[in-house]
Amino acid sequence: MKKSAMLFTSITLAATVLAACGNDSENATNTENNSSKQEQTNSDDKSSEMSIESAATTKQVEAYQTITDELNKMKEDQEVDWELVETTYTSDLKSAVNEIDNEFDTFISTGIQAGKSGELDKNVARQIIDKGTQSYFYQKQKSLQQAVIDAKDANKEDEAMLHFEEIQLLAEKVFVPTAEKRDSYYELDGDSSIVENINNGLSAQEQALSEGNMEDFAVTKQVTDKSIYKSYYLASNSYAEKIEEAVKTGETDELQVMQTEALGFYQAIKGSLSGGDEEAAEKLSELFDISNDPEAIKADEVNDLFAKAFTGKIKGYHEKVAELAKEDKLSEGKEAAMEANVFLKAIEMPLMEAIGEEETDAVYEDAQNWFDAVASENADEVQKLSDRILTELESVVE
Image 1: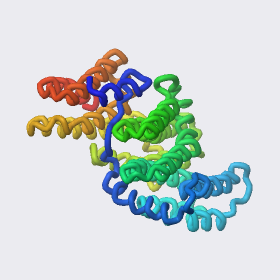
Image 2: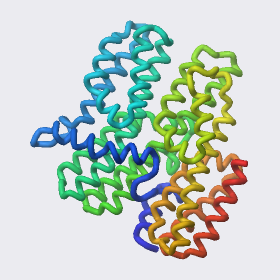
Image 3: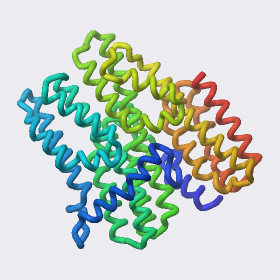
Image 4: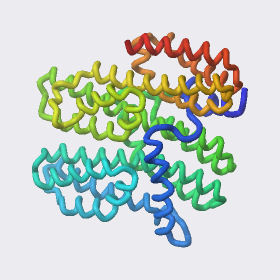
């Protein structure tokens, strides 16, 4: 087995927690275009002695915590200082958010203005601001991952380590607390724990970075990134379940708040999912949009739409690998194969529900063997396994 395939197998806690190497396609153009510009700006702002304490990301996280602490006063029926929220966001976050994605700024700013004016329920506004900022931090994490690689390639060792420390800070302060809630709700522990996979990804990345092995770093960063991605997907999915349950029990006071939470988490990944199945991704946007009736949200429909969107992405990567095989360039297909497997792992729960644990395990075994076949440039085996995987997936989303 080639080294990348061995890494793929050994780094994961579950038998087939599948990681991808290189850059993924999720908002790739936007992230790649912005990463160098934003990180250059951050570098210009840093003192000659770089430290995590003075890093731009640290200041942004502190601003986020200031905002959320102020917004959380409403949980105790205390008055919220909306001017503080607005000025903190404007001075410490707005510019950086716009550099990543101006739609995030529009989303967050709308929440601030609606909360300030009373146009929206204050808790709805709070969730828009909180989850919109979390979506920004997810994309920020992706740009920092690339910044680590770029700095290392330029022999800027201290800068590479600083950017990685920024990723670790985001994980500690933003991503892990969110993932803990998903682990608790879905009873995910051990090998299935999102928190554990985030931390394992970070540990493996840190080791690769310390050894100067950026090929391994590029592989292991996907364990971190896709575990966060899965957390956001499951967050949106869980709120669909909570909404339907609340409607059934007549406890409808918090429907729009939960709908807003679903929408906020979905903001981080909707661009990616549109690349898999645009119709399914758009329908999810429509259901989660707070202008629509939350009672129209049905958990089974949301679950099916997510499965279709993920399946679309998986099929796209399989098609790319097939094209490379036809062109006798299968050696270039490992990245696409790994990407497909990452997204396949993300829908483990709907797969198990649809085809059972034994068949799901068989699909993941095929996926691992498919990646190995791509890595070893065995075109016949690649095609056979790809056909089998896609046939199984089609039976799930039909």
